[in-house]
Length: 430
Image (tube, rainbow, N blue to C red; front, side, top):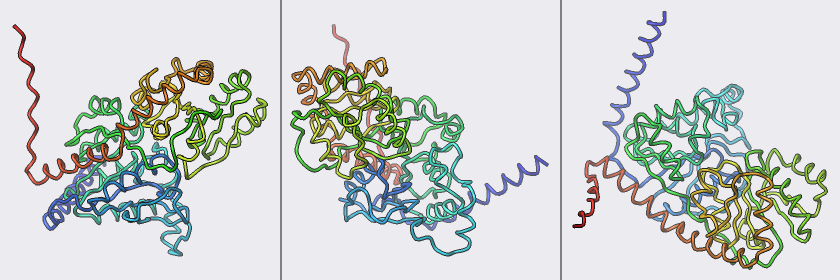
């Protein structure tokens, strides 16, 4: 019986590959003019959404760019949108159609997205159908995916005539083992896999048995922000992010008990929303920190809030490439961050453009915050260093890396790619 099932599966695979070959023969020539970016929910408020909007805006200068959102769960976007960027939504959950097929499939769990994908609960059989139809409708251009589940679906379903790019916003090591196994065997089908950090790029190089045609690290760029640089004279410490356990705000509040006891005139503001918000409010009340720790909710104008602060704190134990650090640097804030092994460790040079807290304990976090509160000269020196670092993540500098990658991928498809010469070793001195 198993042998028969294997033969059946192999036969289906041959039919599928044959169908792909016939469609590819009729497809237009390879092109990077059209770029389609898959995103889970474009009108949400996460860091990935903000960075994708930023990249799409840059690419729209020279390309036809469309963001394809799996879900629509809000009437208006949380972040500002470049009018040159088009939008498409596959599953409008605000105004669902009365289609009985949709009603039935929406109640069934996804089969396309792996159960260990962190956003698995947002998908169902209806989104599977809409996503698969969309991916299979493309026969040229560039298709870029922005999270593991969408990357896996793209690698599995996209026609070979489409230039495919997987973009990872989370570290490989943080993925469940079942996800890592799928990644090992499907990501090789990409034309390119782009990571945000050098550490993650190294992990993929060491982990993937067969690699995509191109493995690259391209960081996020500083997004446009309103207002001026922070003046560093306010007694405000700020943190920004989705209020989940992963962000470690509960640890930051615990550390703030020590800070508030020594510096009662300073205030901690945590901007964001999420499932842990009620727990944090209860923690603040229990610790007697009302008025000393504020939870103002989410903000669509991050720049304006950063400008009012003097110190930015990141309390996550694990991060990919935290945009909030980059935004705080661009506003000229003093940065204090846990020494997370990927993003913060690469973005911050300890004692130059920020403080890396190690070991990552609540007591050490409190001590580092109090250090920059009490030493204004150090606070201003680190803020100036942060501003210099932010300039290396300018949108034009990062965008040029994307331009070069797309040019290379098109040249590889056209057969015109010339591998750059390996730098020769300097001659030995006599």
